[in-house]
Image (cartoon, rainbow, N blue to C red; front, side, top):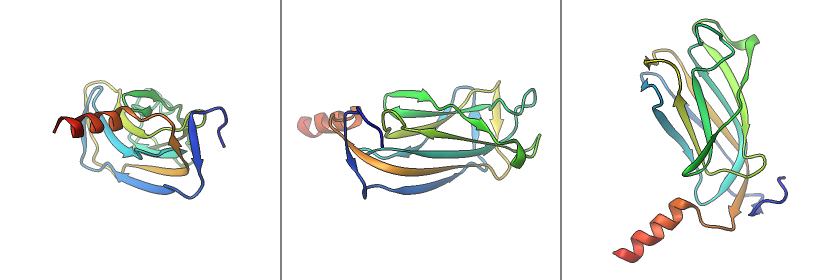
Length: 151
């Protein structure tokens, strides 16, 4: 369990696994897909991704996983899993998120050159391991509250 964070630990709230299939998706450089949002709960967990290999260096992904509490998202360090990757068609990466400060949002961002069309069986799998209730409202919650008072 993370310590020194501004959250209240909840052992039985929000445990989840989510799979996002990326087949048929097209990305331009720096375009992203928000694929996980646990607001108002924050979580920590594991993410595994499969996508086409970087032709120059298979261990260097052409995508980034961004995590945080919107709008503050940061890059998740990804580890290359060589023994189950199938270069050049599919590379497998994984990483941990929310260890330190739990997060509410995950996004996939294309950082390769030009654009890419994902035609293979590519995916993102997220496992939320623990959940927390942040003591401070998220940017999204503050926006919703403001919209409700303006109506």
